[in-house]
Length: 639
Image (cartoon, rainbow, N blue to C red; front, side, top):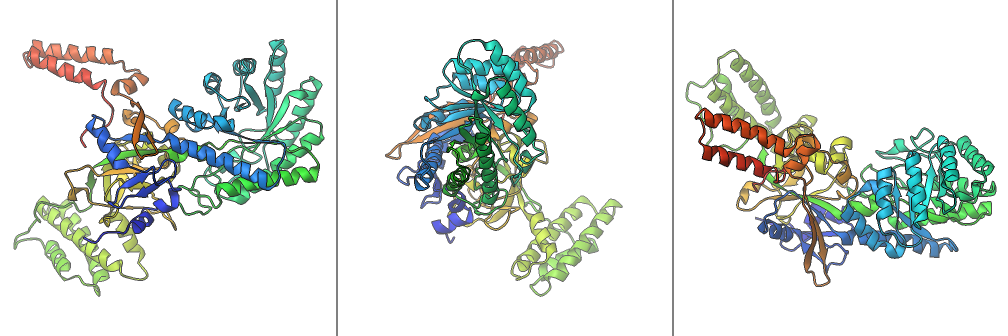
């Protein structure tokens, strides 16, 4: 069999486009990971999976690479520092802030904070629970803790506690009603440090992409222009204007168009300058999130991409803010961004194995046959199959569609038996595939054969839950790259979508990244050609939001998490394994306690023993097997 060059395989699966230098293909056709971007620190992912399998772990497995998190923090901060040097942005620093909502997993947050310590990486929280976690985490001196979202008195008391243990707390006012509550809480707090305040402004500028609704003048969060001025007046009247330190705005997540970001930054910088001129002592401009991830590698303004680089983003923020501040003759602000998706998306991937495939015309052990008394429709379908050629494929395919419909009618009135129907169906799909092979050679493919292409693709059954591991694909049609772990230099022979093991038709990945358009099928290999080894697939770039948004549909829980470090000599170290949810864990979430369930099953087994249906030994063994499953994972264990 002819083999693909590594360069061709990288192009086919898009790795060179969306991989950001972090992923590659070995000469033997295996997916590799370079968590620092250095080719000398490269690991063959399939080898790590096999090692874990030998230790009793099963896929699905989530792999996390803390070094990728460190690399992204370094790239973000370095981009801003370079921009500040280039545009002489003097006197005010850049402070990165990580929004906990993007991924609150302790291992992820710890890795980010450790790598971001020298850059004074701070945290953004949007709830009381997130603030409770943030106050207990180790932050470097000068790092910010930004408190966004709607807040009650308990949350504000917690923010005051943060200020009094030495944290740089900034409470952001989202609604005018919060001003009086904050002033009352500050008054009641008595002597001691208090949080600084910020205001979130609803810009006229809007974002783009899937999350554009979180921006604009009708956004869920933020103050209107009138409410902003009222806030300043109330703070000034209460003698608390000196606490106002930050202006914040946010135009949505995953902004693919740089012009949208530039427009928002210019408007936000202008509002900052006008507040300074009004006497408000704001010194921090928080440009929010929106820095995109190029999921499909197209470098376009599509929802799954971005038409700008990280360096261009930082340059535009720094240059625009300085330009506006120079025009308005106000001091340059400390710049803050909340770029959670860009920091975390690439650090995590899910490895799952294919359990089997669903085909419209599944291969049979032997072709069905029909005797001389076969119905006319069967005989005519057989003749079409044997005689179809390039000049007649369209006509013969149309004839086959009519004969198939006629066959179903004859079956429904009892004139065709099951064997004859099966033979007719097999003949129809053989005709369809032969017609499609001729249609693919046409320069202008017909719509009906494009539809036939979609109808004939396989569905690969993979051991995972879309709702748990890639929920944004189901909910928002978010694209995530999918790549086989092995056989990448072997030409694919099948086209397929991925279906999960939930009992839900929506549990399917049926949109795939491509440089020009969204593909409805993915080119894959036939797992049955190498049945002795699992056919593993990696779903990539899952590190942002997927962990926190995943649900337990069908009571499938979180898979095992594996944290991997690659040393300078390419030695692989698994530094941490977080066991996923067991059946007992997910049942408990919904009120099913393992001891209660086991007691009820034991009661029924005891009854069967009394009835003489089971022996005591058999009943005991069944109960032990049932109990043991509470401590097992929720996914299938047959690789």
